Image 1 (cartoon, rainbow, N blue to C red):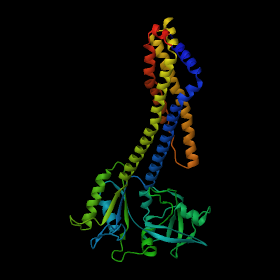
Image 2: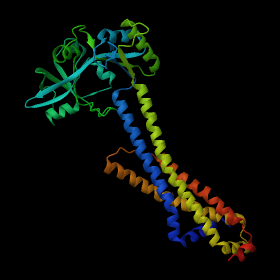
Image 3: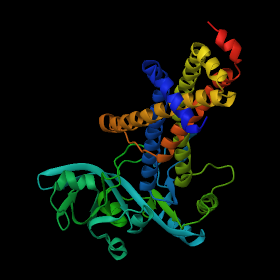
Image 4: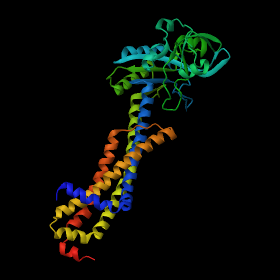
Length: 410
């Protein structure tokens, strides 16, 4: 029998039992739909994490002040400013492959414009901070290094602050007050979104470091060049782990720390954080897909069960076909085609269900989803493989029947 004839006989056999065929496909439909939906949700979460990480800036290492021990008590980060502008300069000079090393201070303050006000984060740093964070200016301009060194009273507003104070109006050139000190708005930063900790990165005001330290946040009396943190951006292709070790050794040397003394600073390699977050999100995606794939296995068992029942019901038909010349391979092919057809049709319906479910979750639940063609092809391919695997035994059983015994079957 030709392949076309085998398909025709198989499809007619399935059409005779429409309800049973539909119920048999249900497991495959649910399995494929679940796999597509779960992988879309997992991929969406992975993409969201990747965007949040990239918003922090690539190849970035952050050194933070204040991890010291006093009286046997370990104090928290930022309790003392143990880093300085001189440390940042030394890192830029002595650590290879450093693009920029930018010192900064931060605090909170009330920003006032007209009758409106907004409490926000104030960050004081040089203009290279925008380079380190890969943070472009959406409106206006950034202040220059000369303006930073001259303690100019200029500010850059984050998108959230600009929206709260000015609405849809253009804030560039306007005057705002930060702790009663007047500042001119020279630019508005591009939107960054939330950080990995869920904080709004756009709720910030950026100003020159000397201005923030001397006029807004207050200077450290013990060391007027002290800063809260240093952002170190490495060049592309730099060995981030080696750079972190070099920075750590340099800061310990500059702070005259003995071998058994604890660090009075803390270093965070954001490249390692990014790798860990992306690895965990990939594991989550694989876990969701694996759980959903259980439905495909259950659907395959359902196909095998129904095909075994079909072989039993059609034993006399099989014997009659063999008696008139059908070969064992023809019988094997027919039942395999039936099983694969159930899987593929169920897979196609499952794809439609999965796409609709993914879009629905993204719309109604507000979750980020990312549909990948590879996951669709994988789900359909797996469904076909399930049909072949679980359909082979019933098909082999049908093909191994003896014509005389099959004709005598009641």
